[in-house]
Length: 346
Image (cartoon, one colour):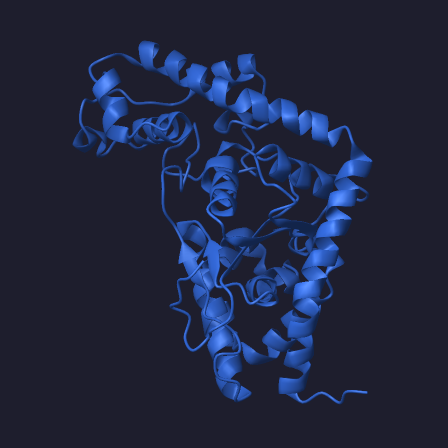
């Protein structure tokens, strides 16, 4: 790809993104992230996709489950269409550059920058003093994740833009502080297309989340057809009446807007086309139609996911191969980082 708006950086264009191995992946992960990962791969980008298991341990993890959860996310990547022959798929902790570069960046970043990160406050809640230091500094590790590969672009949701800005600030300060102009790119966000932000089926003002206590709030990628239909039937709408016929009719109706957005993203129709088809009709007509298009789209992915997950040795081989490829990119970059910092080298 050729598209540079990355300071003085003139190296190759590369995409990086990662997903934590915690809980089942859901429709929001698929439409907001995985589907876009596949599109970027198929558009010819050099893509590095990580199962970020180091991030996972910033919060308590049940003993003995992390490795299997890592395999599950890797299997979901592949089931959704990521091709390990075209993209790098690996586990974060298998590449030492992440941890080493994160330490360097901890010494480059400033407390005030990290304290402004709103997600720490959201995750730590009222018990911030009891939260791990890792939870506080994980945006710095995110910067290391991206820049260990000199990634120039990151597919992110709106809620991650602040962290990407921190990555840009850290990259810029490193380049200036160590007098290596253009060494690290200033990574750009990739936010476009339908389904960028899928909301809860129970509350159109909350993002669909693995951590929501209600399983009815989300469509999991492992849900079967009957469960998908049940969840869509129970999805919250409103008391405003039928489906609107025009986009402006979605204003102030977040739950309806969310369902229409999901239909659009899954079917490939524009929001306008969906409303033209179902405008003036009741939710008793629209919801079953939504369930049908979702099942048709997700059923093959669910089956592939189950088949891939059944072959543990195959997943492990993909992760090992991905780690070798990721290390091959990151290791020379880290050698240059050590040289720039001024570490003694044998």
